[in-house]
Image (cartoon, one colour):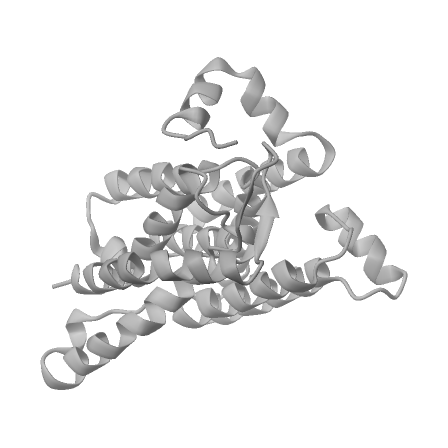
Length: 272
């Protein structure tokens, strides 16, 4: 029954999404995308909303049927990152990137990006402390923090962040030869997929609250799946991607590479 959190959260996301989109649009919560279309944002709140609603039947199932059937891994981490991302969506200023947010903080400005980075690191350390000990705690926390930021860097085109998440998840499932961690993280994975479908079709934008949650779940999955050597390799790769995104353009790289460009545009619906 490890599929239970995934299935219940998926159903909750499918039911909530249309009403949430209407409320965002009616409330003026729209943002201009790269084509100039103004669409509802942030759809990332769907992930937390669906997961929290799904906890009602899951908690009852755990209380009266079988607690072991409803694992809820990384709940505190993902909920905290979602909150920090929502703050960034609501209160972000002109600063962009770690350098920009760092400079703003040094000037004495309030930077939601700097707050998000510090808060994510704290949440990642708390999560890692509950999963490992010794040097692995720092490696796990580094992977989670960097993954959260990298998926935010990827979210410059519709569906890109969730596509990257799906590819990473497929690789981890194949590498492990098991669906156990998909079951453990299913409470979050299911609404991410639903939000990603709307994002890909340019019906809504994930916003920071969405892309950061996708990154946090990806980071948690990596942290739970990899051994010490794997964590070190993952951290190194994430550092390279982060540095490239700070000093160059990931978007330009994707556009230049024919294979990546095709994968990036696959399934995307052009809306004026």
